[in-house]
Amino acid sequence: MEDSASRFLLLPDELQRLIINFLDIHARARLACTCRAMRELASLARVETNTEETEITDDALAALLAGHPVIFRAHGPLSDGAVHAILACPSVRVLALQNACVSEAAQLLVDHALRINRYETLCLGGASLTTGSMRSISESLIGCKSLIALDLNGNKLTNYGVTTLAWAVGQSRRLKALGLRHTGFDWDAAVRLSIDLAPCKKLRELDVSGNNLGLVGVRAFASMLARRSALQILNLSGTGITDDVARELADQVMQNARLSTLLLSHNQIGKDGADALAGCLSGNRTMRWLDLSFNPIGPAGAARIAESLRRNGGLQGLQLRGCSMADAGCASLAAAACTLTCRVETIDLAGNDAADATLAALLAAPPEVRPGRLHVIVDDVMQAAIGARNGARRPPPAPAPLVCLPLLSGPSIESRPS
Image 1 (cartoon, rainbow, N blue to C red):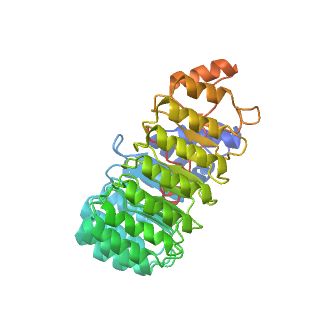
Image 2 (tube, rainbow, N blue to C red):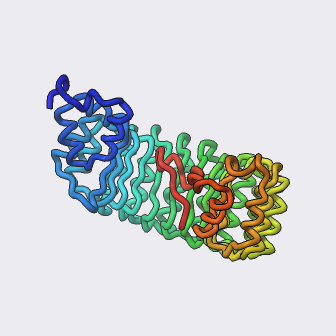
Image 3 (cartoon, one colour):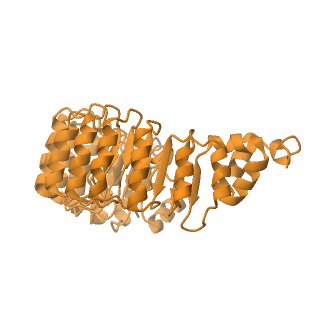
């Protein structure tokens, strides 16, 4: 297919890009080899491949890299030759390899990526990095001047690996996002990490979810917020937070004027913890998104949060999925969200057995609120009832929040937990 005779080039630009996104990797590679305009268009979009389902050949990979992609994502194992080919591509600035390397290859990859000072985002989720490789990686990180986001989620770093990395991150002057989800460290490394990260004036996003931090570990991150931390997004989901810790965390959030997103799902926060966080919301104007999903806050905790929503002028998103709030708790939240003084745009009440009282509260919303400004996520049966009563189709889902390290996930946004 010659460039001048290609029917593909006669299509509108947006349609060309749409076709590129829907092509499988081998078809895209064949077209990219024969059509220069195709290569240019492909370079505007990120290159993604799932090597767990389809093995990518060296020729197909070479064709994709010939398009000079800026973002390269792969999910599944890659050969050593493929890894070296990716590293040799000078245009790649965002490299995300999920479950793509074994430990030896992963260490070599990270060392080389950090030393060449080219990558801005490096994601190596589930790359089998071990504690032994962290010292070399940390030494390379200190001298790296280009990296702004590092994602090591799912690697068994343990306390030693995280402590070693924390010291290196503390010396970095550019790193803005750090992902350490499910990396196997506890309160001891958490304390060290919070101390080393506190002076980092550039660090905006931190994900330590899925680690058994305990009371001491969560307290350490709470105190970091009070030390004029620059953090804007903090993920403490699944870290064992109880009501006592939630109260201390709420006190520190009140003193922090920068934190905008706090993720606390899958913990043990009950009524008392919800009450403390509600008080924090009442006096906080910087918080934009709060996730308390799958915490047993109950109807009483929901009622307290509903009161704070009427006075809070900044919160835009609230996730309360699976919080055992029953119909009474959901109704109080729905009524508060439908008031004109509440600025919440998205509220998730699914999985709470919402029924008639919640439906009545939603249908009683004033015209200024329904259906344009507020998006309420409820179970499908109730959503259908709302649509039938309003005489309208189900509204499209509201955009998800920028959670879980947006710098690490690029343009895409992580979906809400189901």
